[in-house]
Length: 570
Image 1 (tube, rainbow, N blue to C red):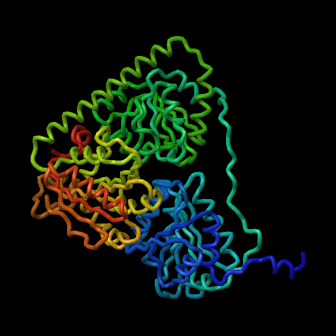
Image 2 (tube, one colour):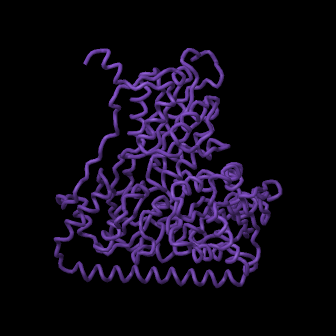
Image 3 (cartoon, rainbow, N blue to C red):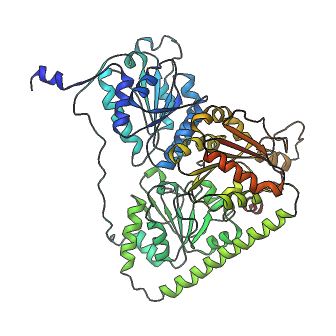
């Protein structure tokens, strides 16, 4: 090809953002969250390409929204930022996206190369700031590198393993013409791996030898279990089925083998199952601290770990570790087990499944008793609130949660049985669920989306809830009002510190109402009106509005697993 012909085959973009957005559209991105800086050429490029921008007032919330979108959809989310303090402000959201394994592409502005080291306006080594928080951080140094750098960022974000990436376009690059050779590079294709029996090894041998197994599902199996291969594997083993907090939403919580969230959030009958199991099979999880050290004593048994990310394989537990896709491992093991005829296994499996059924029945009885106690107490109790939310929810619904003292009720099975669930990672940043719910709704427009949050978290996201209500509404906010930070106040009380000097909470004081024609705000105090108010709020959301139900709660309204585990001072 002659040089003249090669030039005619190239594609030219007026600026870097036009090239980046063209690649995003080619990879089916239709939504961007963010708060850009002065370089509004990005907005012009998004408008020209038909990509919707969800505008934010706070960079952390922009990252939370993008993370919620990615977790709910399983697709790439995009977050646009300015430079300097905009990037540092978003760092908490980057940390959360990394811990959650959310595929988020962060597009940031940057000081021009010619001003580096001069103390220029908002100059910062942003790659150094973000690199520990993402899977890949890169500053594009020349217009010729815009397209290949963007393709690399997209590739690394979607993985495996998936996670956030950071791409910085300095001012002198973003305004330059970008010439891209055709055809443009594309993302690598994923080969479909057919399930085949796996060769006998330590992991399969441990699975075969088990008679009282537990299967623990982590967040890495979100969007990887659409045909219920994990549930069928648990049935084949007769295993008790648990998730980590991050793994909620990956399995059917109505399944007869499902026993809730493991560790800190497990009810007493579920903890009894853990204490008597003989094997734990951990699928695509990290064995985080709230699973292994919170409330439920970890059994002295082998742990078979499977993770596609080497960083997700813990060296703290005995037992085989498998580096690979957990879905493929489950399919391969299931095929291998189908040919087994092990004497005595059927009888042992039946005894264990009977034990699991008894534990589930005991948990149901405990919930009924808790609701009975709640009915006799003044004010609305959190257990009653969750029961009303579950009873009024449609078939397609998602509960987006925080991790405060009282919103952790929603982690406790079977107080809340998830039709879908999005929770913070082990980092538990304040305000994640309140903002992420907006991204979840964007990803699942046909679903009812309820954010179950504390008032501290609600206030952290309040500005963005208000600004997105008109064009990006549909979320029901259920705000548990203890006047601040219940977990800290419980720790304060346990140490005997003066509440007047350390006012972490102002019990019963709802935060200021959010105003606007697209927002319906109510304070709930009357038990008798609870269900009617929730139904009315859901109707308002179905019409595109944002509903806020503020519920004053008592400081002593603590989830039973946390109370029983002694992690909250009484």
